[in-house]
View 1 (cartoon, one colour):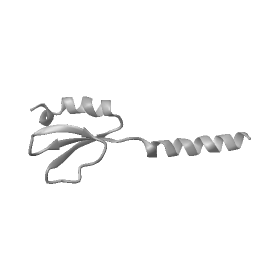
View 2 (cartoon, rainbow, N blue to C red):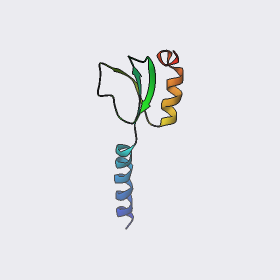
View 3 (tube, rainbow, N blue to C red):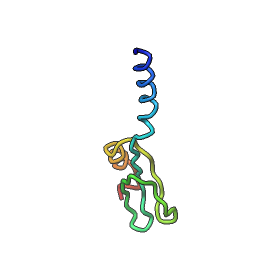
Length: 71
């Protein structure tokens, strides 16, 4: 019984990070403003990728410190 529980815990430990949300900080080249999105930008001519973060709070905090995003 213990080895089944241990096996289930190990599987869960490796599977959970795969489902973790990613938040992308993007710089819009036309409006000169930054934004946070759950999806990566598909229009590379319009957007620049500024970073990928594990939580929305981390993305917002990082965006506040970026010089491109302050303007």
